[in-house]
Image (tube, rainbow, N blue to C red):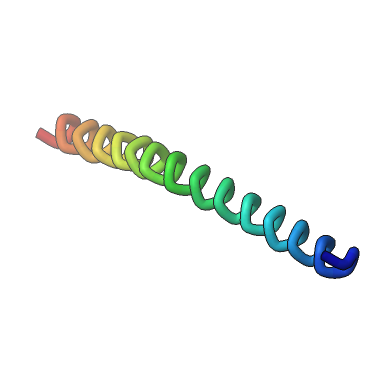
Length: 53
């Protein structure tokens, strides 16, 4: 294997690892953030309804 090919393979492997890590992080944090925002919206909604009734 030539040095150029070895460097190319190393770059592809490292880039793929970063993409996989980023995707994993996004799929873990996105539902948590959506759940938090949903709780905030619902609490504001019910607080407004409770004050109006």
